[in-house]
Length: 346
Image 1 (cartoon, rainbow, N blue to C red):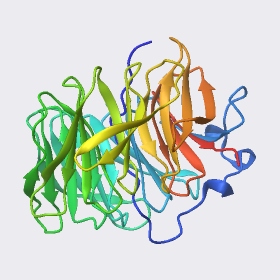
Image 2 (image 1 turned 45 degrees about the vertical axis):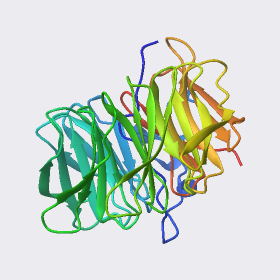
Image 3 (image 1 turned 180 degrees about the vertical axis):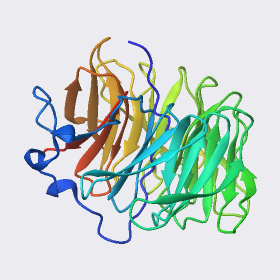
């Protein structure tokens, strides 16, 4: 099986209002194009896919749970209204889309492209997001991850040019205010704690995870960890006390912070397989990830906070990414050409 990477890292963001719940979705009442086909596992509630079957590489959920953004190499971002189960808008871009992120208040959508640019779109009501500005953020290389600070004033970007950057986007013209430097090659994954005071970055080829203290004016190194194999994805728990790590066989694990050190708390059960697209649930009690089984079958794994498998869903598809919805009771599972809504068992 070929390697798959989560190129639109989704970080748990605290939601002030009660998020929209996908419990209201009834598969039988959906439009025909959104109904799960026969033979699809029963936990799949709905499917969102481009009409032409274009490839999808990344996703972002608006923090209120009402809108899902999907992007990929076809240079389009499609915004799906999950409450009304319809396509709300399509944003056409001049370059392939690599990652997406909504601001905590849902009013801003940022788009990272394959050329190192960040496009900022503002909400004009409903699913309409209009282009406002562009940051030439990184050196002609893909931006792998975008993440907002909890107050929405800062945007963090991680890219293939070995750098991660901090942007003040609270002003009409965004300004770079800091860097998270030190990785030898690309920065593949970036995650923030819910209070925005701690960040973790992961290099893919340099096998390194670095922690950053963000509480001061400038980011400061708060620890690092060297592993034996490549790290594909990381996720900080909302409280910042633990870090889930996904990667090659033998790497998936949970680490506990102790000062500037990361101590292995437990392995993530994978049956000896690699794990990708790692992320915590909004309340920090669960971890989700994708894992390959064979050349034709991937699976979604949901672990408890100690690394034990709680749920396992197998699909005869290649899975690119998975993320919890804000209500914590559903998952968005991304294949090469569609996004599936999966309901977790009670």
